[in-house]
Amino acid sequence: MDVVENDPPSSSLLAVRATDPDLGHNAQVVYGFSRQSGVLASSMFALDARTGVLSSLDPLDFETTGSSVAFDVVASNPVDGISAIRTATARVTVNVIDVNDNRPTLRVDAAATGSGIQTGSRNTVRVPENCPPDSVVAHLSVTDPDTGQGGRVDCSLAGNHAHFRLVHIYDAEFQLLTSSTATLDRETAENFRLVIACRDHGLKLFKLFVIPCGILSSCRLSSARQNSTSYRN
Image 1 (cartoon, rainbow, N blue to C red):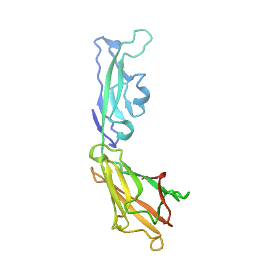
Image 2 (image 1 turned 180 degrees about the horizontal axis):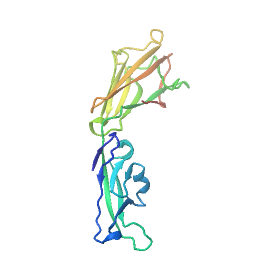
Image 3 (image 1 turned 180 degrees about the vertical axis):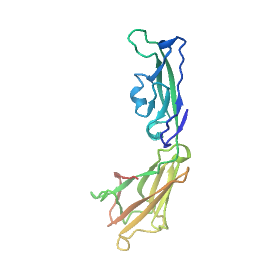
């Protein structure tokens, strides 16, 4: 059966039914999760031992459970200490339908500068003022745990920044570059506030990420040293 993630708990998802042709007490049937499935299934579902009705305890999360949850339900005769216990097992599979409920997350790998100078504070990208045009300032990776169109994300540099530009490399990878025309001058502008807007292709959920960018005095840009900065929800 199918359950949409985040749906409220249901008192009746489905009912398992078993019959026993015996008479009297031996015809009675009780239901329970199998020993192998008990821990997993009982953490998400409840099973009425008398009616076989399966209900959910909490909303299901696609990103936690995956696309489906499978477990075994065992039908048996009540234990009376006299008769042999006969059992039958049914496999139940609950398909979890993904919805676009997550906003993108951005990771920034900022290029460090030479002369022993690295990225300053964890949220600041440092750029030497004498770096050549089209220099790589940072590598950006965007992720979204949703599936399908909801997991595809586009990013753009918000506003009209003459000194920087954002380039899409492939898939969810981007590079932040210095402008091919405008030059950086620390005496004119010491800091920039760059806003990266990331939007998915599903319900168009978006997230704005602010990357402070500080301009350093003239020094040689070194691409061999890198520090990682994460920007998350």
